[in-house]
Image (cartoon, rainbow, N blue to C red; front, side):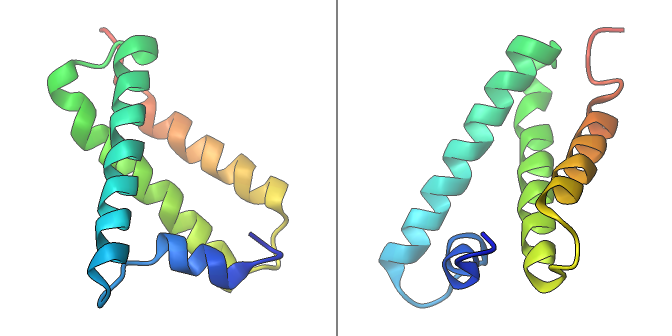
Length: 98
């Protein structure tokens, strides 16, 4: 990401214009959401009915922090990863069986 910030912006920013690029972004978001939902159900025992919106929340948050980092590169990659881990862990607290 640090070596090719334009490529990362192209991958993660919302697009307008080229239908092929927009279709690719929709597929990419859907695949990420489906993978996260499956992980939530299988490893965190999240109710399958709740998994998709929680997965979308996490997917959006991860993309958001990555895009924020592009504009605020004073933090190290490890600091961003540590912060993301804390946020995801916090978001998942209480999503498992009670």
